[in-house]
Image: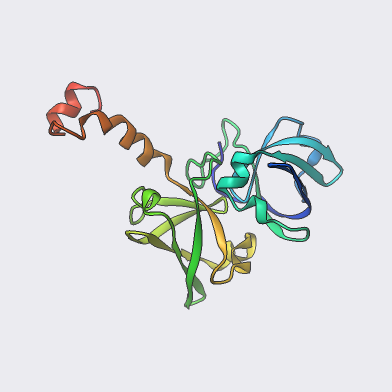
Length: 213
């Protein structure tokens, strides 16, 4: 589990395809002496398992599933990536609950500036846009952000100057693809209430009788 608060920006040294999988190596300022093989690190929001550490380099095996559902497969040597180590019990939850399991790939469609803040507009599959709500949370490339507005197939976020400089968001260009993880709470609510979607009315009484409230 992660918070969406980026610890540091890393740099890709290797992204080597190995059949349907890949080997990814990233240099960073993370304390590798505190990171063990088997630990989880979010790379641009995607939860990956550390397979080797060497000085300032972290190495990951990227599965075919991760390559097909994220932007990791398009990474090239020299590119910057957002990095966050897994949350420890007792840490402050400064962002929101981020699993590191990417829902879909979104695309930046518009960018504007307002009083030093940057407003970014993205499109994504309507299958996942339904989990977004105004003033709710979303993770973009692993960054916990507040949703400004939502449409049937897109949303916008406001980026303060600190977030621009502390993450890779200031490197985005219109047309770029990003990893999107929607808020897990909405997905759980949908799953738990799905038995009452067809053929019966979902009411306060029904929710109470089945232990939801």
